[in-house]
Image 1 (cartoon, rainbow, N blue to C red):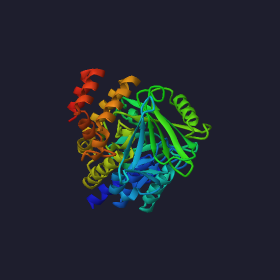
Image 2: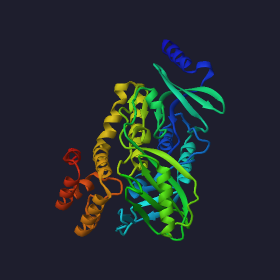
Image 3: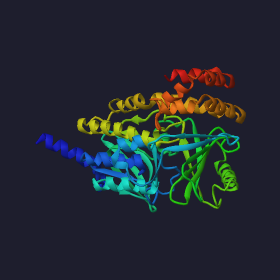
Image 4: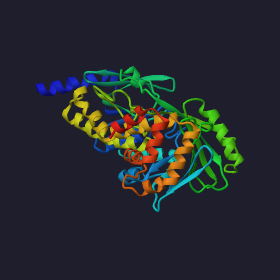
Length: 417
């Protein structure tokens, strides 16, 4: 009788003003958020997902290139495939071309609206509830749960749960408000859908006039359509317009009159990705490849870890910061080296002038380094750490990089081993 009274008292503290209690609340309905919802609902938990946009997958600034390894590991995400990619062309600042090609598909190009929507429908099929046009203004932590203050259509409503998972993408203010810090380094992306006559493979463009320190792209999607985009520290829209004018002059695209979408991409992880009754997953946590800006696969890998840790916390009724700290330890063990090497490789590339970039292209081409890397066991669309370190074992490339940059860059790269 006493145990029943305690249980009833605990339940009443949750159901404040008639509020419904959820086991898990998830902020953000991107691929990572919907996958978290799918997994947690599949385990039998009561899940609610808050998405600030009116439609899942709306206004996403993403090329939609997802590696084959991701599709093989997560069959539940195999939706919205437009085409497969087994080759790509890389253009130096002077338009010197290196073509990389494998016999089998290395990645797939997906329609992100279809992709995101299908995963959300999968989660809903397992019982997860979705609330669209719902902006989470704040999350407050209590001893007995978490409360999200949600603004929706001019009204503010509180929702209660036992634990919160933040997967709201990069740039949200929630993590800062909660005292988890801010991502220290990021880049801006700009992208537009363009009309093409014929484009059979991905093209990547380098050069300080195109995308200073980063790169631009042209990715085939639907017949006669492609995505043109780039990454830049500053003025990505202006750089993209210039790139599209250049592509039009080369007769690669037909028109430059396209709506440009923008997005921020983290290059470093969030200082802390857990606290009492809360975990941060995906782009919001900075679990993104610094080399390319891709975050779907790494986010899904970390989501699996977050699901296991959350499930254990719910079973043990232990939502302490100490109990949830295993999440950060495990995802850093899995991705820490990749993120560290990728970041310093990215910083190194940012320092190169166009002349130095041409020299790198020349060394790679003359030595057939691109072909040997393609055939090496380290080659992977998603895992670049071993590939970068193998490339730097080439004596000519290593010496050239050493002459071009401070030795501290190579030291920091080697420390990632």
